Image (cartoon, rainbow over all chains, first blue to last red; front, side, top):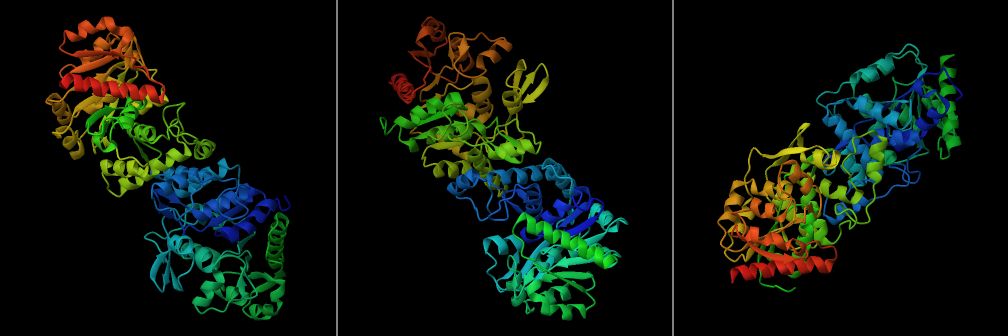
Length: 318
Length: 318
């Protein structure tokens, strides 16, 4: 542990963001790290209440994630899915046997009337973590993509249709778009040292969190430094369909666009060393820039990027 | 196939009865065999709609059952259950990874509003069987045991409490105790050659079926021979808690008691050779008796007992 007294809130989606979340988890006292996690991808599948981003974050922090796919668990088997296929069931969403148990457990707790926040804490504890993995809301917020084929829900777009349809707009639908008490308390904590936006897809993974007005306001009004790690290197996304979606929505694929997107919510951005020429344009917006190597693969690289994020916050604060 | 034109209805519970059902399946044209299956044991568990007896019958007929336990599937793994245990979930009911898929599939179909009969036919077909596995009802009938510890539901008694509580009475609770159309049609079929009560527990596995008045009446009024294979050898049950329950309810453990129990519903009973001295007492009730070796372990023995049941029906009919 390198920063025993530093208290951080991270905003995170799935695989891309979880890499930085893991780095932060390695260098902070776990109880001082809160990860507000996107639940816009949550969906019901074969009767299960599935929270893909929460699961990815927990599996990653617990070190039981599948290092090849990024999602799901290591040493996974697929017995149930194989038989489901034999029975002719719809099996476009990959349910591993170990992973299934988590969906089953969460669904059972949901039926008992437990809040998603409480359930997530139970699961996190069972995986031996003290980290505060916080669903952004206890109420459904659904990420919907407006595409050439009409409106598509997130998992349909992302998993079943493999991000193929052209996206024109992204909506967040909710009958009760309210932040959880835990999220509000965490973002209002006077002892907080800063907020880190993980390098998740801004449009699909972070915007659902920001679509909850109270969360956006608490970040806007936050006095402590707020920094983002860009998910873009050059004119491509580090992971997933970010650059494809930016192109389709007519947004220039660059870290400048990412800074612009978060303007008013961030004080600094970490961009890739190779994109140094973009720094001036970003600084003109009143946003500080730090250069780094933002593609992180090894545990050491993830820890290093996390340290640089903390140092950046300390630099801005001083 | 030995009896290509013989049309049989069997009444069946789980493991014990499924042995004879398998024998019948081996010697009849599958489409001429209907197995009315007990659903009094059905229950909801971790959100799944589970039909233990239907599953045991289908797995057994399809040759994918676990030959050691009698229930569940062969070559099973327990990954999901292991993780559920780690998560602290209630795991008294054994859910194998392959078996789980069937519960998942059935539950999904139930949520779609499909009838249990239709779902069972789909599953049976997917397992390559043409046999008519017929749930006794599409509506819930719950087997409840009155015990020294109060009323206990079947799975709680049978699986969780391992049949330990002392039973004083057995109840079948249902808001809509009606037979399915398929069951009524099958029992009214003019081409039927006979009815076979499998050697299942009469009190826990066959009585739930007979608790549906229409089914009982159709069997009572049936002109074709109705025979039962006794589940008792000497003063002990071949399988499961039959003799324990008979003792607790003050019923003498013998094939005579079994014949008495089914009086008015059967024309003949197959009892074990070693119990020949009971034959006269049974014949006095107007019930014909056939002696056989009723403990069947190998495939050949199951087929032999099935043949003897058919021959017994033919003898009574002639």
